[in-house]
Image 1 (spheres, one colour):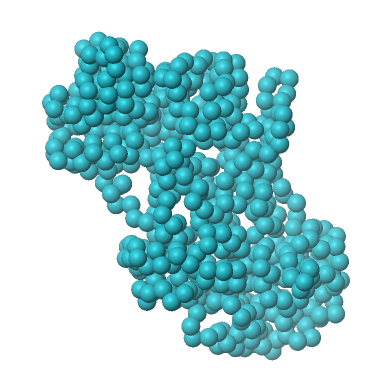
Image 2 (cartoon, one colour):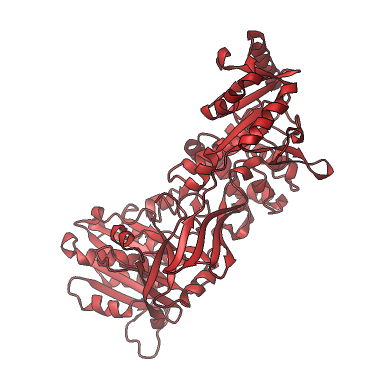
Length: 273
Length: 350
């Protein structure tokens, strides 16, 4: 695209409630040519705008192997997300991107994959998870560990059931606090490590969630023998442009929007500012 | 500079030259404003040019990077929303700037061309030609000599004038610069060897006129780049910073921005607006989490971006042209030379 700031127009095809404050949007680019040419890799993000309100970065929550629509899952936390939550099917939004580097899917070929998500951290992993499941033969063991504050805060509840039923995925879900009717695990995400067989030498671990969760999960993984190169996360920072110009998302001389948002733990550890 | 490329123009003829420039382009020059201030703005007559003034407090970066810069228009059409890019390619001449400001715009242009090309900026910059005046005496607060940004320029300029008393020596440094001089060849004559020699004498004299204490970037760079500046020192420096952002807004090389939509009811303009890394909200996320909540982290960030080796390697220069504006504008004295000295010495003396 010639102009870095020019959004495409996308129509909302459907909106689904995930939790009381989180919705998933199905987006379809309005222009047929743009729709056909649009490609992305899991882990990249887009800049979505509600015109008149503003623009912010959101991850692709869907997989490029399922091209019928672009999905993103949005928690209501500020002005823009509040405006997004008021939109309905048929409304138009601006979409720039894809931005950022994304996950290196080719490098994961033949590996065991361990996905560790916390709360609203599952959506960025979901795109990669579906990419992996749609090309399941390319990968070895697939394990998904997911935690949220309460059962109500779990996103993609239908898909969690679907993954639980599949024989080629190992899924463990936990919540910090149970609710009436919850019969599953209660405890922080790292408590799930003892429920699965970890194979650090052959596994890539993808970690996404709130900073405090990432901190404890990464510590745990390193203690259990994972190399800093095989622990992969996606970082978040306040962003404006998404194209490496505005300087809001810098960590040292790295730009989360251009050099990331996907980094290995080794890269994260070596960042200085 | 090749002797054959240099010309001279009598001072009595510069008015006619500027008049011709005004006919073909928007000419922006230092002009007299209220209460003795000098500001860069569009001129309609050669007499408005304030020759020989110190640097105006606001640099001319607004010519290439307006404080509010329209990028995209959004309107409602029959088939839904219509989005269109905004480009500003008006021919402009920036006349009478000093060397440091030419280097500032050169820096901004490199930043916007780096990695993904920012065409909105680059097209505006491509339509701009500068006519700079070399500094034969250092300005009171300037330290361009430490930043390879003056007092005279060896590169990056379009046309460089040197004051030789009753005339200017004019050097053409680019094709764009040539297009300002060639059509007015009748006003210029080829420079004589003595005139060119005089220009070099003036440059050497100007360089010698800088004081011994200016701004020693190298040792500060070593410490900043490896994080060897104590949190206590950043705290002390932050303690006198008022978080006003003035240093950013008067800096010829600062370009951080935010993007906002202006307008209402289906007629919006998406604009880039200047922002400041010294503001707490610059990195505050929607969740409320802020990686630079502490004031010292924001001050540290400013100087990491300006003087770290990591950015030096990327940008090919420190993020400073030694214009002295932050020294003038900062009420808290956390200006570039003061902070660089503090980092180098490991102690803050205000």
